[in-house]
Image (cartoon, rainbow over all chains, first blue to last red; front, side, top):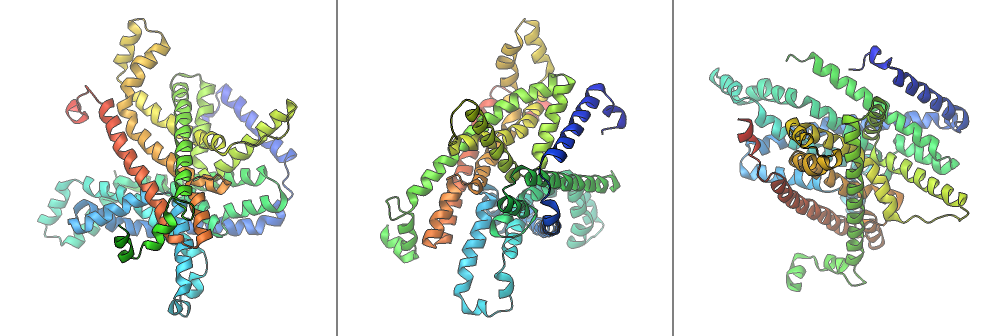
Length: 256
Length: 250
């Protein structure tokens, strides 16, 4: 933990002064006049980034629990497909997966008249459902492996105790197995969530307007290269910091 | 062979993927070769940064340590895509300024060199952490023994620390290699003709999206699975002569 005292070392004070000077130099000499014009779009973009990340982590985690369970204790006809799913997702680039879903499914769906006339068509014509699907599957693939380890890592005695109390299997899973597994992998989950945040800019390649897409628009509209990218990096670092803090607080609340 | 493809309804896909010109197979393979070149270059460059960075973080002075901490934290908190763009523009800017200062005109930078430079810096930050952990896991007695024999520091590093840490570092390095191969796909956005971009071009000009994206996915998966086997060998080799961890710890 960084305390105030450890920041007061002489070389750190010098470094902080240099950093402050750098920030000041950036603020004065670089061009920031585009900010007011693009601020509303940027807020919208940050919002898109955050909700896509939140939705896909939650959905992906819900999908990862059965995937991990199937691999940990499932019979072979469940565990083999689950393992292959995780291998394929982890073995191919996410960008390729996103493009496969968006361009592949997106070019397939219009061929079927019944899909075009269905209620879902207004959504399927947009890009975000494909982005959400791709990111959810990707998170589930990585997390399925983590959950496999977590489920098999829960101490056997605890499960046997529950069984000897006559707990039914589902109750046992809900009250003991899952909470124990989640507690054990909480630090990993935090790391994976930050990786998910870092995967979100890829959705900009299929025309979803997230914060990354906003910065590329500034770049192509005004030919200002570095300033939007620097601001973008700062935005991601702030969000990553907030996620870390949230997980730390959550971990601190759990009984050891 | 043709009959099987015909009955499976894959004749059209096979024609699209064939290696001779009407098919796009050769383009995909060329993209794959580029991807592998960039990935291995970046991995090697990253290892170099990682080795010196890990030594700096472990034995360096306070200023060097703080600088390396900033480097690893920032690189690991910012998405690769953003880093790739920033490093790409910074790199091309620097080279162009240098060449105009020396009186030459604008320089065309080859995609492969730029890709290696960009991904290598990203990989470096992750390698520092992997190698630092591995060096810490080497029993200090071994290094002290080398020092007691009067080995100079570089020789100690080459003959004792690196071989002894290999077995701890291989799993992490295997992960990094896989990340490197998959990160090359991101270079498609900056416009390097690696596998993903070649695939997209082939797919959009033939409208056979599923065929090409699935084929490219298969190629990436093949690379991943083969790498897994190779790293398995390397790990076995790195552990030669060591008791397995389970026995060793008792």
